[in-house]
Image (tube, rainbow, N blue to C red; front, side, top):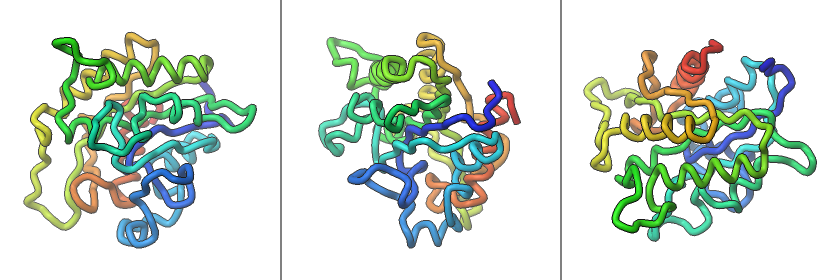
Amino acid sequence: MNYKDKYFSVVGDSISTLEGFIPEGYALYYDGPTKESAGIKGPDDTWWGQIILRLGGKLLKNNSWSGSTVSYHEEFTPGSFAHLDSRMSLLGCDDVKPDVIMIYMGVNDWASGTPIETKDGMEERRSFCGSYRIMLDLIKKHYPDAEVWCISPAVTTHRGDPNFEFPYCLGGIHLFEYSEAIGRVAAEKGCIFVNASHNETPVTALDGIHPDKAGMNALAGEILKARGIA
């Protein structure tokens, strides 16, 4: 696809939020003080804004919710889960539908130790693969012509802490298992898997998770490289 002038929409968690660019009522991470600390002044300083800028596209919708998971958890905010139609039906604007949908989800599922697959009568929405399948089915229903990028989370560093060791098994399951799961489900659903988990360029983060401006730029480059269009 030639991405010039194409409409891009984003599905994400805190890493993809930006003050003034997410739906009203959604939890926000990159607000005024955090933006200043991260050196992020606007969309062009985010990973998604960098990709859209480099490809000559246009942002349509950013449906990112800080703290959200793909899967269902009783203790998390009702309505925040990415497998809900109430979120996936909001990636277009009036009669304009996205040409490309970039999904950067899974960090909070990984951190919460969400089971990869359903087992022992578990509801699909409670497992990572099950809920990811539901999410993609909803996207396909609403936006059948969109090119869907299923991006796996990148490994990050901690700005200012040279001794930081990335917690690959933060929730008890290795990050790469979630990455592999995203790849499997993307293949099942005819979507594009973008493996950003084996990034070579360090993605610097304020706290070891949330990228600063340099980290966002690195993340954008790694995603484009993994997508094969860098």
